[in-house]
Image 1 (tube, rainbow, N blue to C red):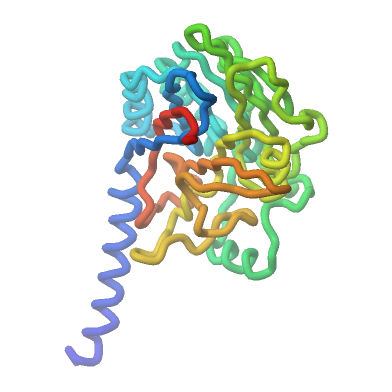
Image 2 (image 1 turned 30 degrees about the horizontal axis):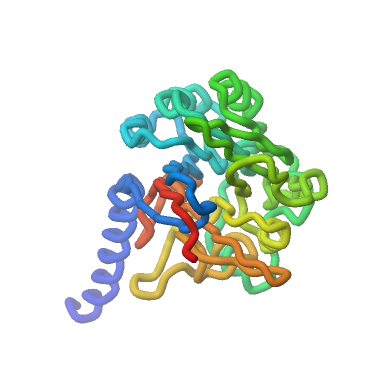
Length: 309
């Protein structure tokens, strides 16, 4: 009897332990990553950029809120929020409260699909199926009937009141101690709200430095930014794969980006040009899949320095 049931019981126990670890510990084990990016023009002083992404706030997530507030102690030159702040229509006040200390610094933002619509319960295996079929997002279709409307307008108003620049299919400029940074942003490509034709043409040439900002790093968007000669693009959306295999990495990116670039700093090439790409693994999860494995939640402090050569 012991031999007959010992193995399946052991597997079940290991599975339960894995669930407890990924939901109870790793999903709440917030980290700060530090990255240096050699992209600035010669003679320009370094810039410290804090990127926060994929907060997916659910009402009552006190530890996440405390951690986000603590990031203000880094004293960045400016903050970039790459979207998906919400996973709960009641979460807007808590997002604004958690980001309040960071909104004392110059900043800019784009939205992701979860800022507009609440998540739905979904079989995680569908992400693997969609990858195999080459499908991602809603393919331009509106959300299903009954989708929860998140109060993104309140979130937008809170950011705007604090002085953060709304980059929804538009350009904006931040002034940082006499340095001008031009930002070109897009609405979320995951639900085909991006309109690159409205911002095409590349950097204006009037700022000291220019960069692109988007929530989901779809290849069509990365190609456009790179071909237009932006030296750096910031994105989120992927959750770093969220459930990764130790010593192997991510299985999916939830977009058409390859898994080798699912998080962190890499490069992208298009039309003979090269841009740096930084994809944040984010600091939250969909409320219905509150798990992370081999992919802890994060924010990133990027130090931009002079390009080599």
